Length: 171
Image 1: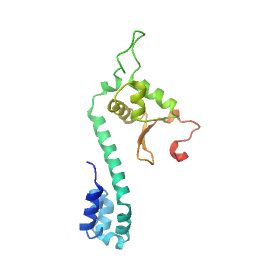
Image 2 (image 1 turned 60 degrees about the horizontal axis):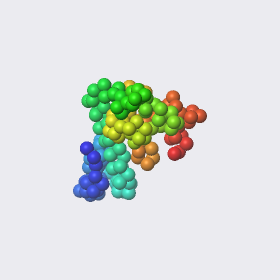
Image 3 (image 1 turned 120 degrees about the vertical axis):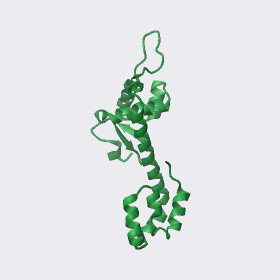
Image 4 (image 1 turned 135 degrees about the vertical axis):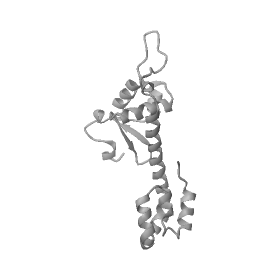
């Protein structure tokens, strides 16, 4: 499920200008939805805050929904897909596995990789790259992180340079 800014503002409006917290329930912020409902949107201060920040809250809710969807999709797909060979191979021999492509790309990028980068490096689709990355994250080999721009990246701590992460550097 993906969330809409106009729907969130509509729920904010019909919920007593945010006092009932309907928009928070919509964005799956159940705990704070109850707080808003019981306190009148924190005496309307929280409602005013929500009015000003609702587009960002919807973006964050969509990122969380995308991550939930990716994790659910990973659990449904068979394990053998991540082990398939990338490309058809050449006269010199078979091509590397998608996992090897991911690891090579992560090492080259200081420990971070996106599905798009893997797709380019391994001559696979972005969906195939994302599926393989999700499987590696599910096995604990990688961590899913979200950049401040909203882009989901996969972090491989073993390849971090100088022991620092991009999130510590503010990139």
